[in-house]
Length: 173
Image (cartoon, rainbow, N blue to C red; front, side, top):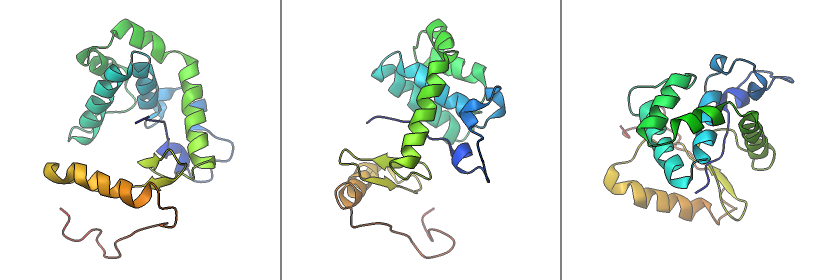
């Protein structure tokens, strides 16, 4: 799996004109640009450490604590806890080339793959699919993901599946 960057703040901006989130001078004023920068900095220390960092970041953010995504100290602490070289991580977070990667990832996602939200999966054959879900029970998670892949990875004739019952989805949680 190859994690790429996508900015919900950018895609959801009302009439953004020429404004681009990655051109902001103060990254702390953005909702999550620093999280993408931190992720790219972690990638520089290898796939294994990136995976550990990214899982910890997702857990901190979505596991109940709603960790901030625009706070350097949070990302540095997380990097240290995950075994990354903290000094290298801090240095890499200041590298403007990481912001270029983020901008290019987002632009490609929108212009080539039609992405509008996360998570959007881009398959090896160029097909893409957005998935909106609650966290499935642990014992069903692998099978649920395999079913998703089976439905969308190689079936370009399936365009959209929705549950038409408000509130969505009735009885899921």
